[in-house]
Length: 366
Image 1 (cartoon, rainbow, N blue to C red):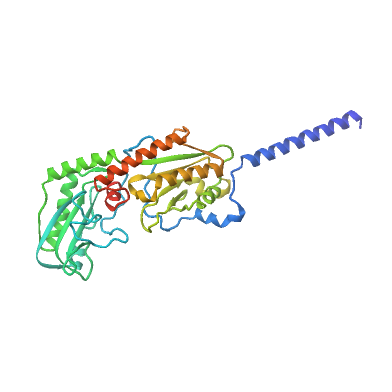
Image 2 (tube, rainbow, N blue to C red):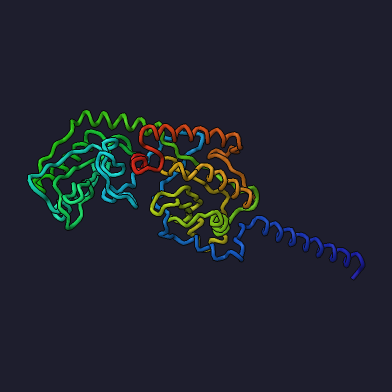
């Protein structure tokens, strides 16, 4: 073999080795980032959990569109009292049937009715269209309004339907459906029912819905990868370090509130298909979203401050940037403006006895 042939062979080998090395480095650089082995146990966040993440509102709204107008099917169950709530006199209470956001039809009785009879008389579906319907009884012993309980006796009942929620205002058709269900209940317990005037209540519903629509803020930040993509495990590990836990839906995590059973402070979500892949470690995620349903979370939780801090920390640790839904960078001065607007919104809600995170606000904005 001549010296020229030998030199060409060596050169070719070196070129081939360089190409292989370059492809290896590039492949490793572009591969989705994986969680640290030392924190491997955090990957359990990938599994759906029934932990205390509470109600999970679906949020996909640009932070510049405040207040938002997106409406969702309500999740409020009128037959369940607020977690940890104890009955209080009707004139003071907030969270059960309340004239501020409900149509209330009183049912008078000649004598007493048992809780078992009331439960048996309840309609199979406690909704009028898209509006929750609730029934409460005046407990003979405590003198307090409560959802009927077996073994208790009641001297009166009241049936209510919510005036508005994120599906819109109570309309005439829904009011008529409410009347039918309420009358059937009253007949079953041998009670006399008195209905408010339909046109007045429908007008009140529209007014409340207009207020709610104008003060319904749902914020969303998008965290985008600058260079390498992320694996689901890598996202979950970094989010878990900030206190996020697995949500019910694959690809969703939530930051729980300080009180069990309440809606989460924040939501974090990424591609569901990536979370459900046969080999999630090979799934490439290039963006995730952080969300805040403002009326659902108590102001005292400081949700927007925590949202900003979580976004900044995740961007720093995961080599990403924080943007709005259109890909525009969210700078500190923009965040400050949003925060100032939120403070005004909190004040307005409180002035209407609908403070963010209160039982009434969670019902109205659901």
